[in-house]
Length: 117
Length: 145
View 1: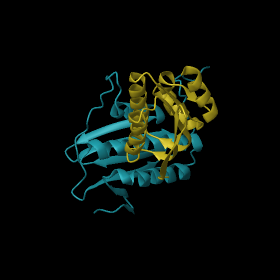
View 2: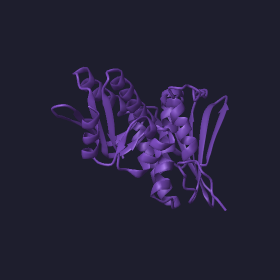
View 3: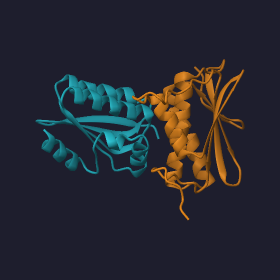
């Protein structure tokens, strides 16, 4: 229970960051760097897809909050895909579900961002 | 470099973020053996991961450069102690930005039934305890009736 992968799917008007595995204190910096890289490159609409994530700890949640703050400052938008009920429960405990939209599919998240754009 | 060691007294881990995986595996094995269901296992492992992360980030490893994990159980409760040689760092839960440290501690408190911090001259021990079938209600609502 330790592997972690990130893949970025760049589209015409948004980027999808696909996270696979365990997002912990060891892995969170790589996620932060991937997100910052897209924002620095000019991306203003991001989907972070956690469908394949098995685990995300408080440092990973901190990365999501930081990403939300950065992209809002840039007048952009961020959506998260999360299908794991245990992870959703954790997000609800810390109120993340009140801070950013949680979707159950990538298509839903992309559609929501397209409507917001 | 110190190596992970599982002995009769628990698990000794190098105080290194790359060792979090081993801490989670140790906690998950204990939780599965104890009979926790899938959601309880996730909650227990999550809380242990937060406590070990805290020890790695803010604690002080012992002279061998390790932190210690020790599992215990009674008839309805599984416990896991995380020990390091440093002083306890109070989480800044009052911070509106809710930094990772405060968020992690708040999550521990919600996901297990007991979070006990013991600070002594030899360091800090965080003891996490979770009862069997004590499934968390994430809304915080209690049982009715």
